[in-house]
Length: 292
Image (tube, rainbow, N blue to C red; front, side, top):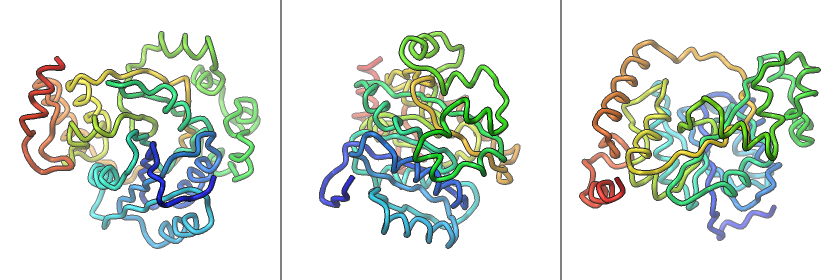
């Protein structure tokens, strides 16, 4: 993969982060192994310090990855605001969203791209790791993809559960589990994708929202807009590295639930607290009526 700043990538991968340079580095190592090469990375940085900046700058200089670092000052958990800034900075027609504490398998970009459909968004999967295994994973483990091998993880101390099928499902098994899983297809920020024009049409993320369902709320507006969610949680996964969540409060959940309740009840497609701080233009409302 060779950088060419003049080429407009078809896919933009938006990676959110906040003061987790060790985990973000592992995520970026994962993106260096992608089978699909025509993509850019937009790092949506919610106020990280100098250590994260130095690590990203080193990647920009030494890695074949095409990286744009979008940063905002740290004023508490404002992931939705930095995600909207990253969307504006993106150039791809198709957007894949993930988090900086998630290592992508080498088929992540190619699978999202291959399964993308007009009028749809994709809801993919993640596999949570313990802290001890999270720390054990090396660059070599990611390069050889053995960290996605169920047997290797079990040797590292992973407890075997049904969820390990996310790492072992291909072909018929993959299709079967995607079809019959009781889990609804929702927009989950650690592994979801959709068309840029659709995300823009609903005005991106609601910036009033903090931790707890802030990603799903945008997905609910996409569905109200007529965009169909497709379940692919067994088709491609990220490894979710363990970490504390000291920034989470009960008030965040209460506030977010109230916003989501209104979104569902009123079948809202637009938030005036999104990319544009304005009411929905008539063209969006008209298209929503025609779609539904």
